[in-house]
Amino acid sequence: MDFDWHSDPITRETEVDLNYRNTQNVRRFLLEHCGEDFKFDQEFMAWIRDDSYKTMGDVADEWLRRQAED
Image 1 (cartoon, rainbow, N blue to C red):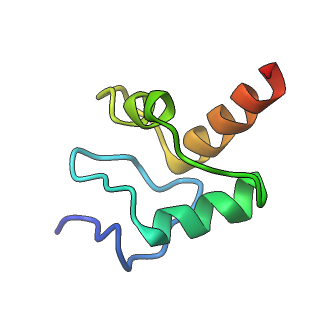
Image 2: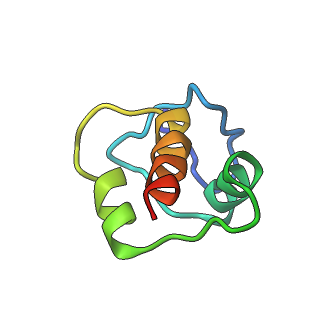
């Protein structure tokens, strides 16, 4: 059964699969793990969907890493 990005619980261990969607559920998870300044941009969304293995913990960590560079 496929992961439902709209309603299934997301944890840091949740794998980003081919059915990944930028849903409100994902946004809530990332706001919780990255802080209220979290927002999607095209480059970051492309990185999420680049077909390399990653978890939602990796996604949160990457967003934080990118913010530290700015």
